[in-house]
Length: 115
Image (tube, rainbow, N blue to C red):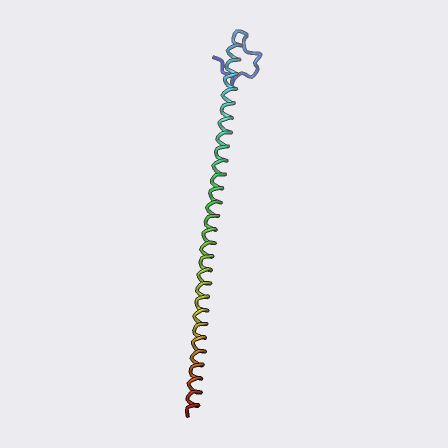
């Protein structure tokens, strides 16, 4: 067998060993091609995995932001509902005070008319 790695000048290979040399050279080139393809495929897998990880990271960040925005909106809606309820209670209390003043005023004028 011919060691292709040690042949510096292909013309120095004896004629009877030329077919074996060419076969060994073709096998060496095929192995180099396979190794290069495997390296490129491995690099592509690493890039794809990194891209998927980045996509997943962005999705998780977006979901967290959406969750925080939803919680903030719910908090604001609750605060608005509480403020509206407080306003309604205050309005009812104002109406009750006004009604009480009317009743007191009517009682005084009735008492004054009766005296």
